[in-house]
Image (cartoon, rainbow, N blue to C red; front, side, top):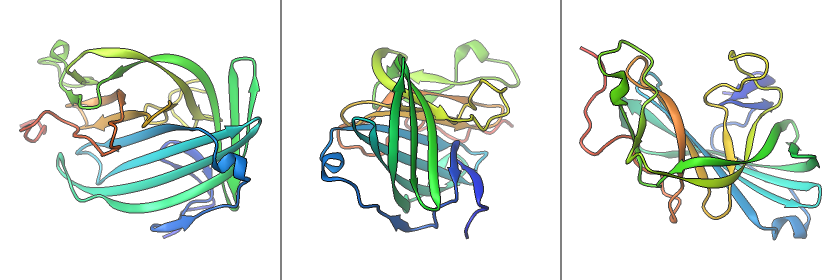
Length: 230
């Protein structure tokens, strides 16, 4: 099924939308194809959602020229259990990544699709690749509002190109991106923004490293049961 011409796909402002199982590559200059890669990944899940989705964004830049490759996979949820991952789409976008002071503006397209991101270099707190999201003891006994926390809680600073859609399609206010909007481009296998929406049980996200194999890591502690309140 094709979405409407202007949609927000998992927090990124996209003109047009890719079909499921679509592969849409683009012809790019050899210098861009061979350019160093930075990677950002976004993992959205939770028992309140029918699906879990993982998008991997790979950015390559030469001067002001930019190539962005977005690979998406999806799995059906059964409570907190995530089903088998299936490929959703792979789309490449070509355009520009211009720098003005400490702001990088990415405008790329593969007609009729396009993506626009506003980015800034930042050092963020990133958990280990094997870290999972658990309940925060500070919220024990409270009805709602627990954003969860990393287990283990240890984090390290990682420099990323932190990007959000421009303009941000959120209900958080004109200058605040929605909680699911974040991308953090980093060297190597990259950094992942994991957002868990279990309604009033856990509703929040955080950054963690992507493992060397780029495999999709666990979300919750091993042996965790349903997080639905009784």
